[in-house]
Image (cartoon, rainbow, N blue to C red; front, side, top):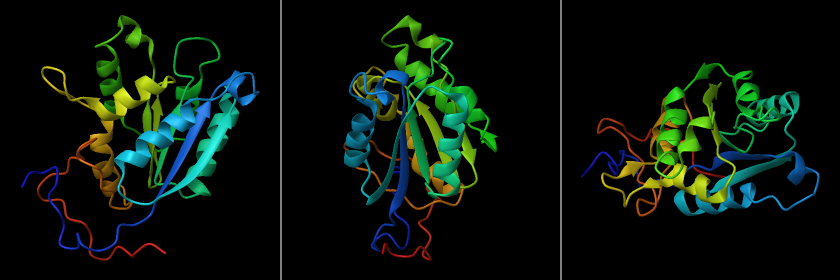
Length: 211
C-alpha cells in the first residue's frame, strides 16, 4: 500500500460532505458580455476528482479588489467552505487584482501552490512567469487562485502524468492540507488525481457522517 491510498481505521464510514466555494472573477463575464467558462470547468473537474459529496457555493464577480476580498471572506466565514477556488484576474494587467484581494483576507500564505502552478504552465508557455496565483489559509479554509482558462485549470489541478518525468498537480496536496487545518477527510479518484498523504495520516474516527 502506498501513501497515496493508505486508509485510516475508519475508512469504511461514510465520507463527509465537503463545502467548496468556486469564484469566477471577470469584469465582462460578470456583466454578461460573454459566457463564463471558469465555473463550469471547476465544477466538472472537482465533480470527477472528489469522491465526497460536494456542497457548492458559486460566485461570478467583477475584477474589483474589495468585492473579491468580501466574497472570499463570506465563503469562508459565513458559508463555512472548506476549500475556495478562484479563477481569473491573476495576470499583470491593472485590473488583475485577485492575488492582492486574496492576500488581504489571509491568516497564512501557502506559496508552494503558486510555485507549482507556474512550473506546470511553463511546460507550455514562457509567459507562465507572468501569472501571480497565490494560495492562503483563512481559519480552517484553504483558498487557491487558479488560472482563467479551462484547459489551464485542469492542468494545474491534475498535473501532467504523461510528462517525463511526471509533474504532479496541486490538488494532490489539497486533501492533506485540509486535514492539517482541521477540515474534512477528502478522498479522490486516483485515476484522475491521487491524493498524497504520509503513511502516518489516518482518517479521524470521530468524523460525523453526512446529513
